[in-house]
Length: 307
Image (tube, rainbow, N blue to C red; front, side, top):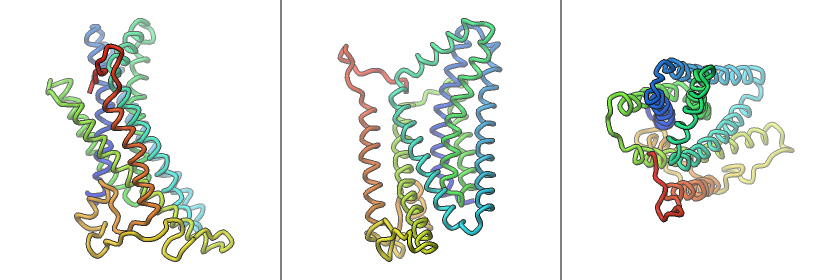
């Protein structure tokens, strides 16, 4: 297994898994506080259903991709990079949105979940299903993001799957440490560090999206000269080559490969890729860091963070 390729999926699954573990832990704590531990199996069933749903989603996407490539064997050189562009764009949008949304919502997450659970407990007939749905949706949402990230690069799906399993185990251990063993963990610092890593990893996805788009357009131009959109011999839409570090720091060998998967490093970097990378970090990164320091409330104090 390519352990370097497993790193980004490990970190993303770890972060998303800890978010899901927090939801599960808060739900179980609410049930214990209300002396309704009889509903705990519904919460555990929600975890199992969410994980199973994520796995089934991954299998369905894998089979769909396989069927699509087999059905269009002559266009595989075009279909593959275009699929990477599609999944990469979806992953960038979802991961960025979830990063910003979760950072803003984290301050009221505990109160919101407790209110939802309390409302569910008021109706004895549907309380179990309500708890099940709350937990299942939380786990499935995080699993869906990880599945999309894995499919942004089909070539590393095995390594990415291993990283996802390791991240899931790590998130489970953190959840147990918090809610079962009473270990104190600085979750605020954890999510801040993981948030910065996520920004850099997703920034690397932006670079890959443009590379795959450029490769697809190059093949399309070769198959149909009338649809040729290439502006130069070195690339179609990426502009001039700014950096060639293949002889100094190749991105397929250590330590370049680690810098590639974690920081977005490429041994060949073009102008449009650099602009897109910096633009992503400027827009999403600045929004993220502003969300870490929310504006003062009416009382003149910053809203407290649950993390």
